[in-house]
Length: 331
Image 1 (tube, rainbow, N blue to C red):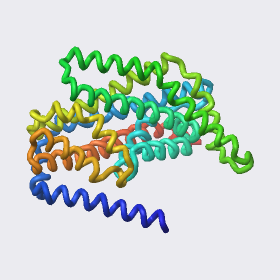
Image 2 (image 1 turned 45 degrees about the vertical axis):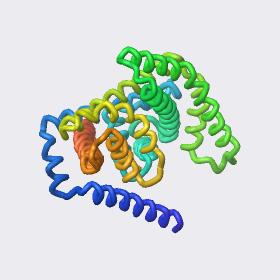
Image 3 (image 1 turned 30 degrees about the vertical axis):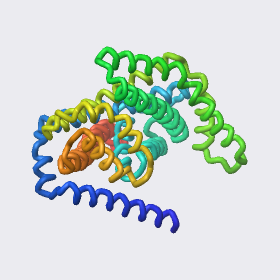
Image 4 (image 1 turned 180 degrees about the vertical axis):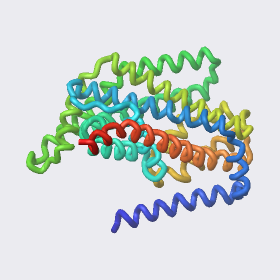
């Protein structure tokens, strides 16, 4: 009862933040429909492709960590199945914290026999998300330093390169002790009361300290590629809405916007993320109407792209399973 009341209060807070932003921005349904009409079919194809590439990087990191945690696991995921689970988790991230949505979707996939077991899926997701948190923290610092020093293209390249070296050198020393502590906490639980998923999670976490430098470099490269697809995604939305003059402050502020969006203040950071986008645009000189329109449009376009991608991947999953279903019926 208390949890339901808390969720209801947070939901009302999110609705209030969105309503206040829409009201302050002077937005109307006709304005939102007009903004969506600006996205041609070709533009939407690019947005969906970039969304797939972004979540593909997330999925590859998940599978990479899964195989590093359990090299001898007998069951691996088809990439399309794993991508479907991750995409469904990203959609859940609009009504709950993104990390929780992805973890829940992958846990369900493991329970359904798609890919790694439920416990291994959770362990790999936990490691991947902690690695992403370090990447995001470093990106926020780099953005802050860049805003202060205002380096040229070469300066930004040096900052990014130094950050990548720092992450690959020190990530294991920051992540492994935390995961080892979680594994010890599970080991202290009464053996007859520990679910099988938790035992699998414990086994996976105990192997996390042995990650090679090569694995960490691959994770760092995938994280950089994911960030690049996010930047390209935002750039397309800015260009479609004719807001190119705000591209630089938006891209520089993207790590901070992402970090604030990960704080579970409201379900899916609904309202919080929109006001953060608006604050960055307002600080760059945009009008409140322009800022609000961009923030709300980003949310709508992202949800539509995820729904289309889920529909496509689910169709692929059915086509893959169709021969098996026919053989089962024939038998």
